Length: 303
Image (cartoon, rainbow, N blue to C red; front, side, top):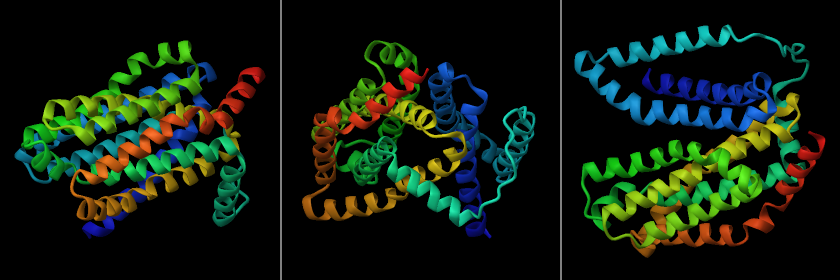
């Protein structure tokens, strides 16, 4: 029953995220889309990383079933709220089959160079990031000499950076532009992973996780917004499904690679490999993001 419930929840979460990313452009003005996506991502992180865990522990101490009942209540409440969103952008009932939609989404993502490039970059970044991050417990204990508090601080540091990034997002995109901000995100990841690869004490690693989170916050908001703006409305759900399947489906393979790399090169090995890859992407960011810059220019002209 637990396995079935976990599978069902994971499936529904996938449907929810794809639908949410497709719904936001339908109810938010184009000029407010970047801020809306940043708020959406920050809200998810605040709830999942800062509010949910301590609240869950407190409820569990009262009753073991209370957190699950509360979770069910929040799902029901969320469904009620979503049902009240005006259906101003209703479409005709689908006339295609799911398999055909999947194929069309894959084909569109591959043929649209900017979307393909954003997906490729995030897939590789996730692979090597989680190759290292899957070893965070051992990294904290064996390399940093940390404890449970420092491990929590590492996780909270990354989440805090993502939330903080929203405070500077509008200013940095106005000053540098969207493509340059994506480049800065890649450099933030490179700087942070280099720091993590050489870190010898917890404070440095916590600061690097904060920087990592800031870069992630900028990338998430911009990546989501650009994909929404580039993609026609009817293709949003299909494109999101393809992108998320690839970029997140690679994660367990990255974790597996991290374990093998740690056995072969030592515990610091996956972190060094991750730093090398991130630095390479940062160095070639301008060339890699050229198709994205082209589509941004096209969108600006059309606007």
